[in-house]
Amino acid sequence: MWDFIKERHQQILYDAFQHAYLVVLAVAVATVIAVLLAALVTKLRLTGLANTLSAIGLTIPGFALVGLLMPATGIGATTAFICVCFYAVLPILRNAVVGLQGVDATLLESARGMGMSELSVLVRVRLPLAWPVILAGIRTSTQMSMGIAAIAAYVIGPGLGSYIFTGLSQIGGKNALNYALVGTLGVVILALILDLALLLVGRVTTSKGIRV
Image 1: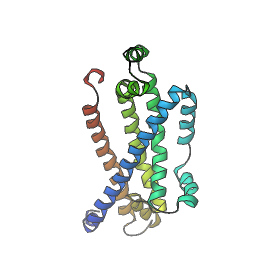
Image 2: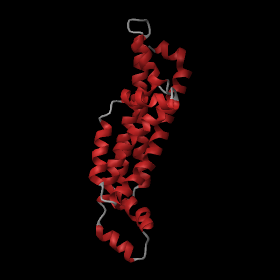
Image 3: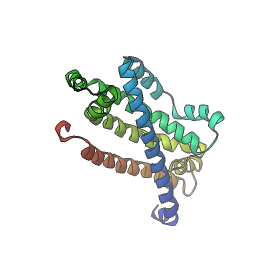
Image 4: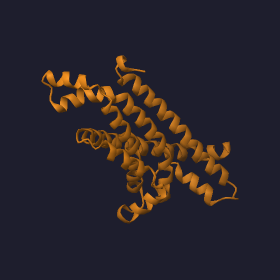
């Protein structure tokens, strides 16, 4: 296996970067979408509906979603990105709803009493206080997205998933196990690195007064 990696290390590193880039970009976009949706549904008191839709969305198999997207978006990075982004939104949305609902109503009334607009209350009070819960959803979403990005290689999406599919398609061949192990272990290592990075982000961006 070591010889396999040495012979292909540049391509492996490039594919690992592509995999991480796809996940980070999809989770970043998903975070914006999820937070905006959470702010809307909490204002309209539709949190039950949002949680139900999140639960239903998570039951959709990754291959099924890829198959549904292919006629519209074709084969390639676009389909992979939409698929990863779709699943990434769901845990973040659920946590964002919980986090925004958990902000003390007294604090919100105090902020409004000081003359703050609803947007200011959201940006300066609700989101900072809900951030630890939202970040927990982002961490969960990132880990899940790593696996979804691997599945998205089925439509020639970027990343390490292609190694897993190559290994499975060559079962019994000389390098079948090497391909599968490189893809699988690569995804696990990237997931651990990104989770550590998010922990550091949490330490920097969370107010000391609400750290747990």
